Image 1: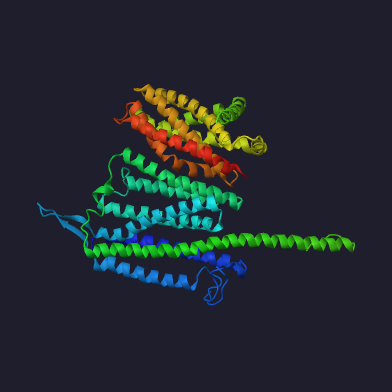
Image 2: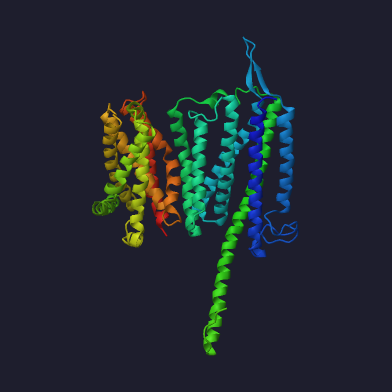
Length: 53
Length: 266
Length: 224
């Protein structure tokens, strides 16, 4: 396979950055949702329990 | 965490996440193992030419580029809706798509540069229209995100951010036109997909790339939207809390005054 | 329409009168712009041939940097003593406020451009081949920069960290103006064989769109 370094760098950087960004977003969400009262987290209801969102 | 009540995850988004990961794995399989490198034979000299294995970066770069434009268009459309309808939903969507779009845009520039080094023999090409337009777009939306991070009245900030997004998108045709005239040459033209030796499997892998990165994009958007929504809910909640605290304070003060005590701290 | 222009003229005269009394542009911004030209000279080595061939681009970068200062000055006038509220109470249409402020910035930029043109002729040894194209380009690009700058100045005002926010918002938007004006100057100063008049057209389109957009959007930007 030619250009192996370029391939690893391109795919590696892209996947790592996307992964880190995704983790960051999820972590932000966790931190925030702890400080928001239950009723305001409208999509996080368990099955069958509807909050009308 | 697993009950999902204190995160932006839901059963739907978790399913989407699993599908996305499986998709990424299969895309890697197709891009690196199943497809052939781009090697062509010159019709007269019989010399080998083409992108060789560097073509495997295309399955990553092109879908992300298309999604970047989709994200910025979403941001502009939501901004326009926000200015007309003033719904918080549109504002959060605009912010989320701008942020995810900027991440994608940065990666498009980086992967394009890495791909350009072996194929065009340069990390950066000033005369290329799409490259320059994308770079200016990246800078425009960096400014948008900077504006989003300033301390200001949320509604005022939302309105101004919407204006910035709309102007940024309106500016794109002008930037594109001016760069095109600027150095009447473009490398992208010489080596676009049109000239690539496209076989069924190559085309399929590219389409799979669109699908998989579309899923990545959707997953990120979903979570980023929920984070934005939580931010707004938290701001509202903080205000309610502060009002309640002040009211409680006032009541203690009144009682304190009535029974002749000094102050009602604590 | 006539009232709009009369009000705009009043605003422009107000801003220019403040400038005439405070001399911020003349004593700070103009020397800064010339300083930028000198710094380019130091940075690019004192070879006049190099400097002359880069003169159009260096000229417009200097204009853009000075324009940032001029715009910041123009918007800070309205923040001091809450002049913004006074303006809103005056009952003038936001569009005329925008046109007036943009016109004042335009005139200040025009003065700067004259100084900078003298600067590149003296310091870089530029020669003016086509004075008509040069003047028209300078004027059209100044309209585009003044209109866009005034709009973004209003946009950034009232937000935190506006001084640092304005450049990152404004400069990428002005990228087409920088390219167009530089290429047009390439023709006017004879540093490259390009058709400057076509670029002038692009600048004119940009200037018109920015002025119309600014006049329409200014009300929404300053409403609170």
